[in-house]
Picture: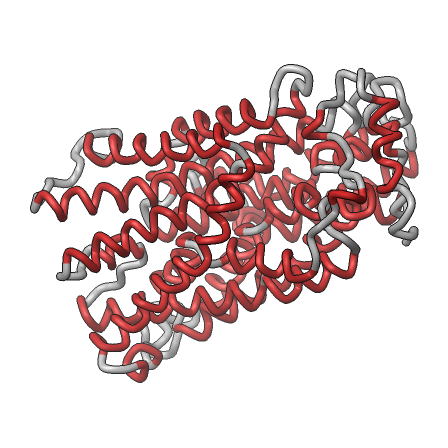
Length: 498
């Protein structure tokens, strides 16, 4: 790999030569060495803060709801994050070495205009996650209002799927997110500083409550797997495990692509590699254990599993504890949402028209699309959360990851012409700004998972296609990554300039 020093220090000179390009704006510019202040602890802290979130809790508890016992669920999450750590570190390399964000990094393989394809696919996924996090925060506010007013609202009976009160609280929390985006990066940094301790404290509170109500950890952790002999799903463990593992990889598949948006601020490759390795897999496993333990306890306490922590918190009898917990959840969710689901898609949308769309406008676009996706339907049940949402978008992002890594590490040997990345007529223009090779590789990488996806959303009947073909969907990220990686290398050798 090339040396880390040299290029970053020249970033201002690079910027001076491309400042008038329509592909350039200040948010997409290479980060100079003087602004590279993220060390190993910064990256570890980033992942501790990002991993300690309500979707992590829901991820683990949904596996319990699907039939796993506590150690099977935690191990599945740990393995998934260990796997996704590899492309995370590899794609972070270009950001650290050249100071470029994700959409600019994509220009080397997809072309200066073609880079909009992976950028927008990644951004739309982030919009979905933005909506999910906003829904969680809005639902917490709704539960606070219901508790204070002493109401017992009837469940929604309309096609929309939620009540008017739930939607108003969702929009209120959405408005707070938009205000933070308007305020800018300093407000985001402040929220991240207070977020991790709050959510960890909230998680420990839930864990203590579960331990006390269930009579210790013994009854909680002794809950059998539904896949054990004599249980309802005996002998079906691996049929559930592999798609679940794909879903766990898909959980951070977005960040495994756009990690250059953060690694561009790293002091060195060593800092980003060790920091991410320390911060991601273990934190995900440890925080998910809280979700596993509390969800298992709900089976003992209430006779059925409750996988949504907001619903669990509503069982607290003390209104002060309930309201305090919900407010802490709202603030923590707000911080995670902005950092994880706004920073990167804002850059991606800005890439569509760098001269017209700023980071702030890109953030507002993210927020609007997040509402239109109706996120409450994405998290309505654990089956849809894992098998429709997580696996479906991993089928898109896996092939993109395969293409980026094949191009940067195999074809280019980690060498990029940074100036040309911002030129409309440079070496990354390919065919009218689009890399035909990358687009074909992406399409072929997605195709194997398409039949299974259509069956999963009931667009096709399971009997209409071979079972073996439909089951490829369960391995969507892995198959898409491998197929796109191989096809890209073959086509690039055949047509290097296409």
